[in-house]
Image 1 (cartoon, helix red, strand yellow):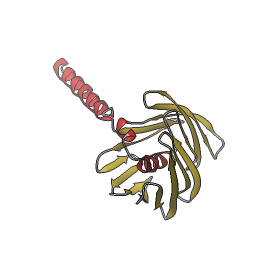
Image 2 (image 1 turned 60 degrees about the horizontal axis):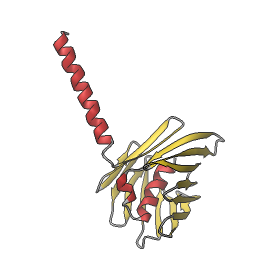
Image 3 (image 1 turned 180 degrees about the horizontal axis):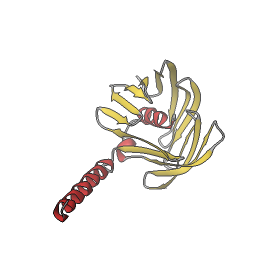
Image 4 (image 1 turned 90 degrees about the horizontal axis):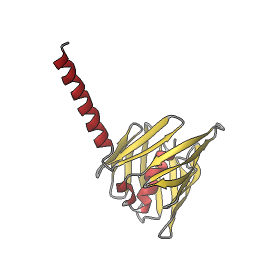
Length: 180
C-alpha cells in the first residue's frame, strides 16, 4: 500500500468515527455505564432502540423487546403504567409534584421504585439499585448495588429530548434502562 492509499484509508476511518460520534452526541442517547457494562438507547420520534432495546412508540407508551423479551408498557391517564415484560406484570403508580417524579409498584414482576428529579435519580426496579446524584448538565453519577452483593460506580447521561417527555414516558424508559 502506498502512502497516498494509507493516508486516504486513515482519513476515511477518522471521518467514519467522527460521524458515528456526532450521531451519538446528537442529543437523543440515554446512556448508563456501570461495572464496565455500558447500556444505552436512542430516543427517536417513532422508536427507542439500542443493543438491549427495540421499542416502537405507541400513542400511550412503548412496545417491542427489552433484553430480548417481549415488552409492552402503556399509560392511558399518565399516572398508572401497565403492561408486561416476558409475561411478567408491569404495574407502576406515579406521583409528580412539579419537581420530583415518583413511581412505585411492579416492573417485570419485581417490586420496585423509581425517583427522578433535578438533583437525584434513585431506582430499585431490577436486580440492582441505583443512587445517582446530578453532577453537571444532565450527567448523574453515584453507585449501583446489585443482588449479587457487588457495589460499583455508575454513570447516567440523559439526553435533552428525555427531559421533554411526559413523566410516565420518562418512568417507562428509565425503568427499562435500569432494569438490568
